[in-house]
Image (cartoon, rainbow, N blue to C red):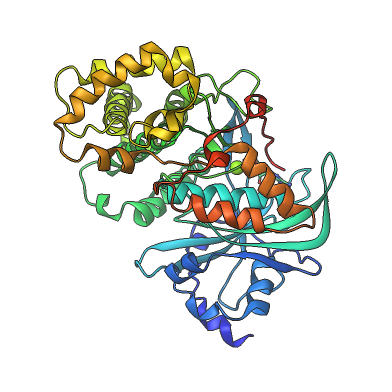
Length: 481
Ligand code: AMP
Ligand code: MG
């Protein structure tokens, strides 16, 4: 046992669930680990400050080569609808060390991703490329900077071992922090476990962990669903307001906590096109930018199905209680969408005519496909409107009309700045930083863009960030690498 082990006050509450929900398994060790990234700010938040100075210890922990005394490592079982079809899955390359309590008194899972094979690995090697773990670190921290609920990244360790994909890659292990790793797919598997007690136990566990205030309401299951739906409505709206495309919204990649999880093929849209898809495997555009609300609803319906038996013995009555939540989905979604987008043009208090003003802009954007980020932020930082597309008469006419509307609105500029990042993780910059960081070279570019992306609402004047090259148009991402 190491002296510093006492810092890790792990709870291992997942072990209270029936054993079909997990497999106890330790990470497999890696050779010659080196700690490439360590998120000190997050570590402080998690109450781990005292670890900061001991790099050897941190490297051992975050590589999976050493397990602190209080941890009872496990891989979680789950299922999920992948592109519409149910599969039994589970952590094939992730191992949970346990939960810690943050300085905010909330619980956080500490999980190693790319930590070796588990009973759920199927044909996979249990490993991850350094490139993809650096990518998850960068994009998840950028999402946090944007103020969007997300799993976070505490560390990335590199190994001298290799990962074989289409080519030979360096290996990375990422430490993921989440308010839990309970997914829609966890419920889907529980409902299929053949023992009705399993779904009840998972529900009780999840309620206590995420919605303790709902324990005593009249119908906790319906209230739980309503809350989970609400969080997803806000989450997907958050994605859309910054042009984020998750890319693989399978139900195993939808967290009950309402945090963005799974940074495989995600990317940010440049030119506005609702049909944008980046993932190379999403051939039919199931998870395209504008399809995200529909797919979130679809996943939430799969969640609701798993809980019907807990609502009422009479199945019809259960459906009757749950159906309104879904009938109202679009209306609720659109309300949040409208409020977010009105803020994006500096309007906090809606007046008559505002909806039309917004629609006119969105219709023009759909036709002219201007850069999504620059369009909005350029309303206050005019250097972002230097592209020819913004000189078009239709846009100039709209802008004059908009100016008249906001002229009298107090604080519209601050509102607009708070609602619109001036920079997003541009694909070409992310690629450049990751390629330099993962091919035995250095993380200079990575740190440089990470630092900016942690404060995306500050005003930057950066051609690199604000003028994506045309070559970005055919950008493709690959998942599970
Ligand atoms: P994802 O596409 O990352 O959501 O992963 C889908 C499923 O495949 C999950 O159960 C993962 O744990 C599993 N998986 C992905 N990559 C690997 C790998 N290299 N080895 C084992 N399992 C994996
Ligand atoms: Mg996943």
